Amino acid sequence: MSEPAGATPVPAAIEEYRPVDGRPFSLDDLVGHDRPLVIRGLVRDWPIVKLALQSDTAFAQRLAELDNGSDVSTLMVAPEADGMIGYAPELDGFSYQHFKVPVTLGLQRLAKYSRRDDAPGMVIQSARIRECLPGFLAEHALPLLPGVEPRIWIGNRVTTPTHFDSMHNIACVVCGVRRFTLFPPDQLPNLYIGPLDYAPTGAAISMARLDRPHDPRFPRLQQALAVAQVAELHPGDALYMPPLWWHNVESLQDLNALVNYWWSPLDADGYHTGHAKAALYHCLLAFRALPPAERAHWRNLLDYYVFGDEESLAHIPEQRRGVLGPLTPECIEQLKQGARNHL
Image (cartoon, rainbow, N blue to C red; front, side, top):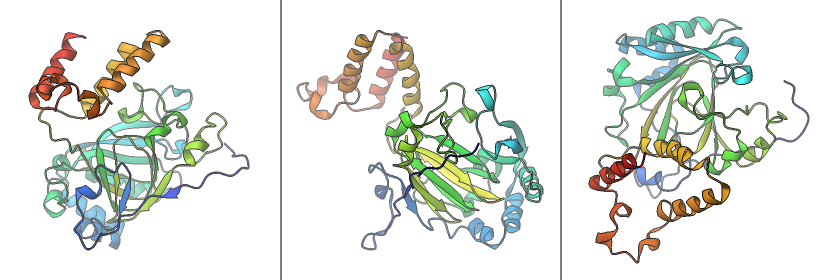
């Protein structure tokens, strides 16, 4: 598709972390500020990063040594899709096929494809490192997040379209180069997100391609690009992304790899971020079909009870706030039971 002439907004650079008075870097520098942050060199001392800086071959050989032979989820993107993980034309399918292969076989295929001009896109998707490369963990710790299970993503020149995660995310590039383009959560109306329940790899994605900013089907994309933020990450660099920030990820070399950590800082026994996604579906079931006036009234209730601040509860004694009080394990179970009773 040819692009008509016209100015396209240039994204701003994602803010980069700068040490403060020599104080060690901590999660407090990330969580609670609701902004993405590039952390240059966060994992530059990892042995696998040093090998990647030597050569793709050295990197791949070490991963093959660590491979225990377990199958991992792998996508093969048709050559005509330009490496874009997404929908087929007319949304009658997807641009890839799904396979399960060991990491070593995936690396061998990537090496073969690097010698072809018409190579398909390929990516090992979100593989739990403990399950496929268990020896990797001993040499590659992230002290910031002890106990958080990392995942690995390995591929060639593929693009994951704009989507969001419901958890906090630190993404560490360990081989190749990746370009991240981020959009604030309020840009949802300008990103043309596809179906919730029919999406590649399960995450709802934008149907608008960032490399086609003048596509007449998506005119509001220009508004999103005007507030976009971008960064290119090299081996050893990391990016923190807050929950619900939209991000588009382009892998720019024939071999790219990333290790990421998803986590929630909320320390409440029995809570997990899946509850929020469940609530989204529950809200669609409960409110979508109501008349406009009634939906507006429920919106007011949700704003008050769910999204309101502490001041709105000041008139209720703390011991009588019940499910509106602190999110204790007992409160979580009471909320779950209340949801069950009303389904």
